[in-house]
Image (cartoon, rainbow, N blue to C red; front, side, top):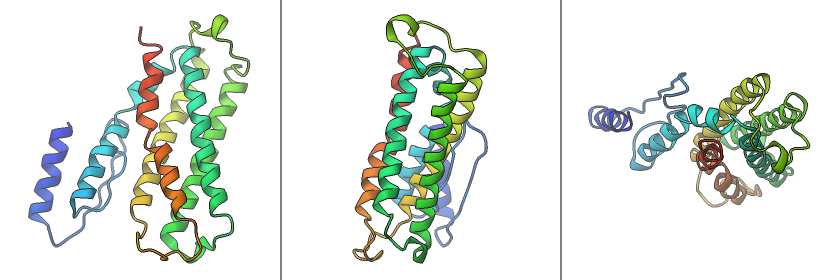
Length: 208
């Protein structure tokens, strides 16, 4: 699939160098979000989002036991904190004056909201707020808890992928956003781009 995507992208770049093309895919096992084509960096982004797009089966594996759920929740907490830190960095910035920056800020807020939903499900649907590794690690995740967490985690990975896409569109020109703390974008992405890695790490805890 990955090679087919790269072949398609390279073909489009050769055949339509005069136009920017936007693509999107709804299937969870396909690419989540395409950025406009036109240079090597954007082609590299296609690979990143193909990785994001294939995460649903891995998310399911990671959530099969309460040990995997606990691992996932810890990482969701770190994502939420990164989002909150980012929003705080732009608290006094007139971001509405910069459409592309404002889009990123709004998208980060949706990520924080989804993280809150996941934490709420863990505590109130899964009754997992007092998780104990000795007593609960090998317990299977209750069906209602599992289905709700999978759904929200898939939503979260789409939102994170979209955040990365929008961040790539920000101007890199020094001073383009006035007094806004654009360095906070790098801090945010350093956490968000680790999403596929942490999903795989949590899945390894339940794959044995």
